[in-house]
Length: 481
Image 1 (spheres, rainbow, N blue to C red):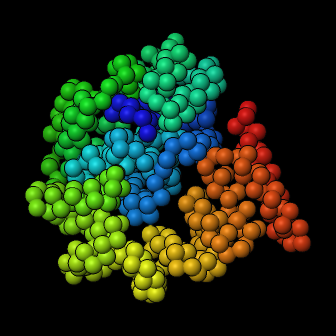
Image 2 (cartoon, helix red, strand yellow):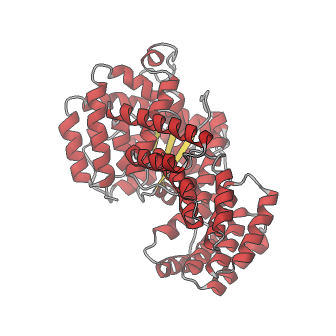
Image 3 (cartoon, one colour):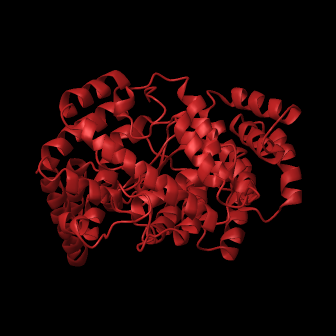
């Protein structure tokens, strides 16, 4: 991934009018959303557009498949959403594998979070300040309101920005920024002035969300300070190109706004620090580098000694130092034996040692207690596959994927294990669904046609596949249009 400025992908998603962060021209009166914004694009159309953007985004940008991280962020968003003005709280999370500090909101209730955001955030409240900001964008329908300002130029502008999105996400900062400059020069200034007013609105409403949820309002200013410090280490585009201008005045505004409310000392959820350790472990170049990192924290200073110990157990397990991993994890398990994150670490150590029976037995016991738990279900499917129980894994995933049909990783796993089990028809079906969710429609159609050839004797399955093929053809034609 290229080293763009601090806001990196938010820039292009904001310019794509997707990430639109902000405050209306009157900071104390919210607009009536029954008027122009609803006429230009309905909530249903926003949802459809958002899903198109999400699929295209997944096709071009590496995203996380870590079930623990995804589950943590998803639960945190669900905790915050009731405190926002969102009427539709069905949110769609995408976790981006990018070390830069960033988050974005897109039409259709999509919230994107860079893994780097959790590394830069020093507390859960700081992370919450960013997520609350994005929820404020969604609740105020900033995309639809901005579209009202651009109705006469939307199609050419969007086409140009889709190209810029691909360049910025996959090529490099110079090419992407050059594309932006070349295609949007005439329109950017006015649009970003409007976006900055949206930013102010999202700052204000986001702080209200986090206060109602019981978090410290001063965390917003602290997070802006983190962003400001981090921005000094990256080359930044000109200020007028930024929809997230991180300035001393914005930090001061957040601090002054926080002073109007009583201080709330929200104790960090340990899961926040455990997820930070998972991300920092993944960002290390080698297991040995991660071991050195977490050993240093345990010997010195750390935001959470438990999280540093957990990270060290992860690193030892990755390095196949099984006994050291077990010994490192043992105090954590003894102190908190019901924590799923620790129990899955125990499972992972068993898998690293190829002790498959013990791993599967533990997962089965845990699933009897929490059958709906997403990380447990994913790890169980992975453990079945690693242990060579390919048909069992296929049967299990074929059922579970119906509960989470919009999860690309589950379809990817199902395709892989179906191939190992010799179920070629299921391979084609699962691959097709994976390609649909990642916006690669031509490959999805190829897989569906292969599946149709193999389902000729099954009338019901053939009918379903035929309808699915027509659906993908419509998606492709809409994209081409």
